Amino acid sequence: MAELVNLEALSTRNGFNSAVRHIKKTLKIAGDVGDRANFGDLLYEQADPELTGDRIALMLRMLLVDKLGYRTVSVNLASVAEDLPSLAAEFARWNGVDLVVSYRHPDLGLLTANPKLAEELAGFGLLRKRELLVVYAGKGSAPADDDCRKAAELAAALFQGRKVKVPEFLCKGNFTVKKAAKTEKPAAPKTAKSAAKKTPPASPAPGKTAELPRAAAPVVTSASPAISKGPVKMTPMYSVAVTNELFHNGNVEAWKRIISSYNAKYPDLQVYIYYEGERILDINSLFKWGKVKHGSAIQFAVAGMEIRDVAKLQRYLVQGASNQFEAFLRGPVSGVMKLF
Image (cartoon, rainbow, N blue to C red; front, side, top):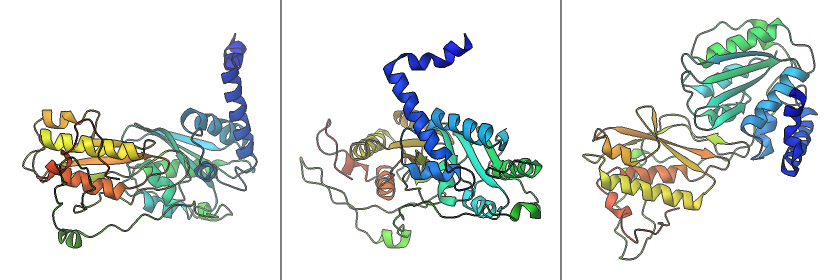
């Protein structure tokens, strides 16, 4: 019965073809993982939308645990480290062990990275308490030992923001960062001082939806967004300060139009809204709560494979949270504004 359950997916043509594609991709990665390349790097460079979630979990189990015997440590994060790039700098010193980390993101599902590279860790966004994080540590095709177990335990502690003493043997070896994953360099954000010199946006002519001039960019709460090829990534959280006296129904409608315009331009990207650490599934609830007032901060992040125009989206959301929100309410009610 157990064998029949395992083979049930092969009883249909779609299931069989899906299994064959997964096997081919697994074999392709299996030839390089361990001694020649890090598993996280291989996924990051594949640019394959199918290599996400449960498929990655299957590969982690088969290639790292069953094939190579990597030691694992899993934790539900009791606390979280806020500066992931600094963690990458620390892990990059651990030449004595190969590391892979997977994180069960509450919105994106399973994410995987080489923790020695800051650009890959940035794809995790901000870590959340009580979410599952698993560290895999090994020595490629060489047998894993107690040093690998110690490395996984120390890495898990660092991800929880704890201070640890790293033994010298973890820094001696051949598992160096051989090459950085390719990323597109994001445009440098403009300072608030230079942005303040910009004139307010002119109202578009009736019936037109001309692109609005840029609004002042707010302060970013974390590192620059990850713009990359590879499995789904999420940018860090960005804060948008409410400068209107109240985030009322007009601001809500402006945000809905801005996000609709962004989704129309980039249908493969998704915008996540957060307030006080809680994900907002319906933007209207921000007005209904009646507590999002002047000086409050609403956060957002963008998720996808090829993340673009985050800075522009941020500027529009800032304007939509101000008393200049009406510029986004002109034009046909059912139409989509061409802002991007």
